[in-house]
Picture 1 (cartoon, rainbow, N blue to C red):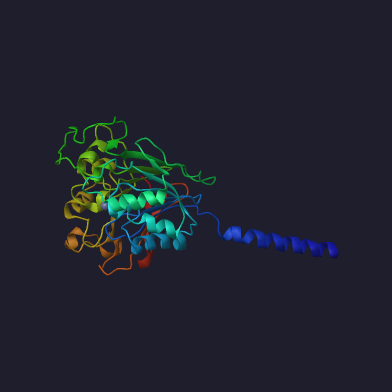
Picture 2 (spheres, rainbow, N blue to C red):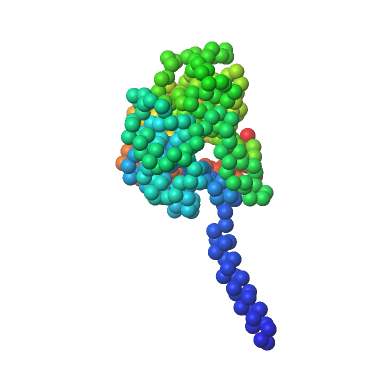
Length: 349
Ligand SMILES: [Zn+2]
């Protein structure tokens, strides 16, 4: 009798020990949250291992840092952000990181390199606040670099995050390469973009066969070089629409090369999601859906996705996010707008 009783105690102890571990088990999907920062960018990637990468941090102040922290802590159940990339130095991308790093620990910082002198479009206070935050520990990325996220649990697809563009160069180019390079039958240049948008870090994430491209605010002439002479990304499943869907980005040469199945526009109510970009996306032969973080209030219904593909319909919004979940094998994925309880499934191409 006595021996059986101790067995129960051992079993009970084992249950108590292992139950919390089961509840907090690492997610089996690869999740990407497109957090609404109203015309800025904040894309949170959580690997099946639980390791995380945030790309951009929205505008300065409480609002965007608060929204990112809420998704990271309360929705994705993260304890820290393991990796953080600032695609470029505009305040709608780098602005939130000083405040955010007070709300949740941020471990590793990456960017395209701190500028030696400050051009007019970069605010000195943004750079100062960033330097204060990273304390000399940021890494400048170059094309070809890999962001290493901890290996995924067994049976998951392989995750790879490759830098395709940074500091005005695309993969395979040497420093000093010109921004405008004649290439391809549909070549058309815009005047040279001297803003920091052209220096954006652009990444290609692959998870098994699933592919996702986030090019920050890359603009027209650099986009052409991503697609010509070589299609560096290849066809992708999901395209985070460059530069919030502004028309001096989203060169049809690149969009045709990416030929996305799903496009997600991180627009604001009065920024991005512009009509020409919307039309270019709609014209892609394999495109199945366009999602928007915000309805564009400056255009009409024909230049916006239907409401159940839009996370925030009104300007006075609650900052609702879009969630992408890729199955562990990388063969299918769901895009959802949790606030509207809408979810759709797509097959990886
Ligand atoms: Zn931007």
